[in-house]
Length: 639
Image (tube, rainbow, N blue to C red; front, side, top):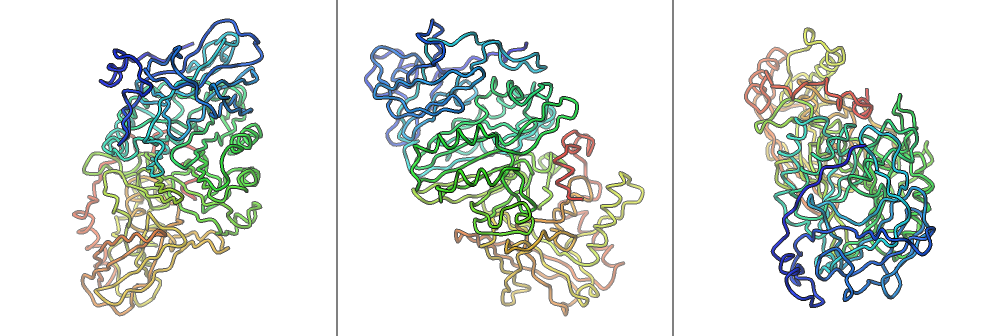
């Protein structure tokens, strides 16, 4: 059974001073006017003989000298929730808790607002203890070593924090890093992970990794830790379907290596006025041959969630995050979605967040869809955010100027990170694209009959895995005069911040702006799928190199181009205003030509100089990488 390699960390100056100075009741690492330095430490396990082996006890305590030991002059913290994965209890006046012992359990503490749990040398939050007396079955990636019998006590240290008490919080969510090899580790490191490392706004709330952190090879867990060790806040990790021990023969041990390397499969924590819940939404079949799974929330978790929420005010902001989203614009994903919504029914400010589908979606409570109704959800009861992906479309496509795969997603988004912002009782969200400013929110192109005919031909050639019959690239910024006159040619806008209550306006050549049509508004309609509902900007690039084109999107707008535009180059100014009143403006130039021959000539000129060379270098291994051949990748293509 393998064990994770140990890393040595360097104590901060504040921590060194704390160890050399008598305790004063206030941690040396705290700062009244800003976030404290990350507090390096660990959960304290007393391996002595317990008074009752059927009961686990211990204290949650104020670790004033930051040595991760409950010293005689340190006080317990009352009213803190502690769980064995099913039962949830609160600590008494002295910070003591008592929990029934379960044969296979992870015991964890819910960090209260105003407190900060320690992190390890890789900045991964430390707030749990695995109890598995005989250890994991024989697993390729090690699992959990035997823990032996019930310890005498498990004590959870933390320090007071003005930063986590603040109602103003920035909380970063990085989904689907999903590295299959060291090349992709490098892509992540130099892409969205670098962006996070350069930010300092999320220090109190930290970064939540929302599953599919690696791609089945759990030996890459250490490299994932190295990737996110540069974060400027605590790192918490949720599991995904590619983070499982697929040689386990039941779901009970499918996350043993994950639990050993990162912590609980499901847990909660408080920051500011917000209660975060992280769930495991993947249920493994126990069949190592098929590695099949379903997207569902176990009954045990639902019971735990009910218990966890008992101490949360009904008016609180609640974020329920899990790798598989409850719904997407295409379908209901989680099998027992209605059961989860029932548990959340008394929490009107709850929002669900997911990853898994490598799409970017902001589905607002109150929307309805034909596919949802068929699955028993007449109307979306809670807003659903789908967090995009650090890997984008599985690191596919050609390489950009920075040597990173374009990785445009099947719903016309780019690799990036979701951030939830809280200001007291208010929540907002934003998606920042890898390597771009927060204002980069619009991808623009022209969807014409000629482009759609080219896209179909290119898709057929890509599906056949042949380049001999692939058509010459066709620019999404070229349109023939006959296409304009025939109608059904649109100026398209993939608005990354868009939701059903956003607004997109288009002005052609300085004319009065017109309001664009949202292609999937969530008003009871069925899925609108086809080349006419496709973003041509990202699709052109994926069809020219590699990557999925789903022919649907929840954040695509289109406005018809006038049929009488003159030959030559025109400009369109597009302004997208999101549901919070934030506006983003971009301008795109497109060319009207006489006929298809002229369109082919101008396309060659544009694609040769406009950011996508005709001979685009492909990302390493192209479509043969396992990520691109995964079940999710095939489904994302929607073909």
